[in-house]
Amino acid sequence: MAASAPPAVEQFLRYLRSERNASDHTTTNYALDLRQLFRFLGHTRIGTVTALDIRRFVAHLSTQQRARRTIARKLSCVRSFFRFLCRDEQLSYNPAVAIATPRLEQRLPSFLDETQTARLLAAPPTKKWQGWRDRAMLETLYSTGIRVSELVGLNLEDLDEISGTVVIRGKGKKERLCPIGETALKAIGAYFAKRPKQLRVPYALFVSQKGTRLTVRQVDRLLVRYVAAAALPASISPHSLRHSFATHLLDRGADLRSVQELLGHASLSTTQIYTHVTPQRLKKVYDQAHPRA
Image (cartoon, rainbow, N blue to C red; front, side, top):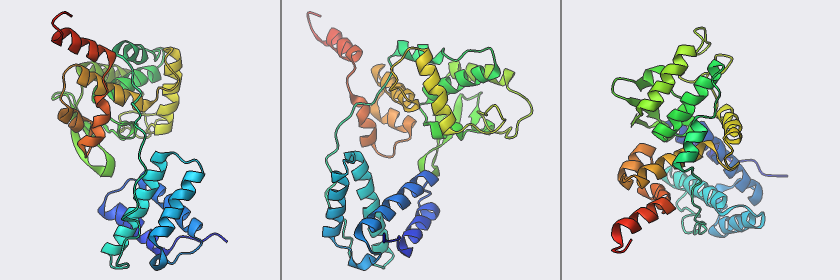
């Protein structure tokens, strides 16, 4: 019989919610990862878990052909769990502390060039109010570089049209102030002129046909439709607009530290994936630097 998770797992999840302001998505994933660990171990005796047990668990994940990023995330969860137990004086030693994180493959983020981005932003038809909403939504994603989860959480009060800024609630419920461009503000204004007056959630910035707040899944489905309409690669996702935002800023001379702030990254190392050199940037550097260009 598979082992259930020990009571300490729920204590850890409560700690994440109350003291670390972890999102529901994060705590759900951590709960699944820890239950998977204890199912593999076949017991719930936290005091008997050894470094060898953790290594065996990581090897087991590898044999299941799990992606290295998935294994690294699960190992990070396990390491955090046992660190919490040590801090809470339930354990004196973290058995996962010395387990090396798998070497991650470096993948360039998928992004659109400026012409492709313009095609996507113009893809929603405007025969109905939902099309105006979708244009405003795509313009906001590209103008601010925010995550889709941050987009659907926006309220009317978060938008300041006079200063051209929007309050973003990011990971860990951290707030940041983000600039929003004039084009996006005009698109939002056009959407508001068409938006129904009677709504179930009138304070939400982006609402569904039923008058409720749009969900991440709904935005995903809408983007699939508009990616196809704009004849763009099927691999383009809502996050690709965030990648495009960062890439285009860097291509036009923005410094990495500023892009980090705009994206809401806690660490500059997270932002460094956007330092990939696009052909346009490479050509520009060549033209400026080579004496016979």
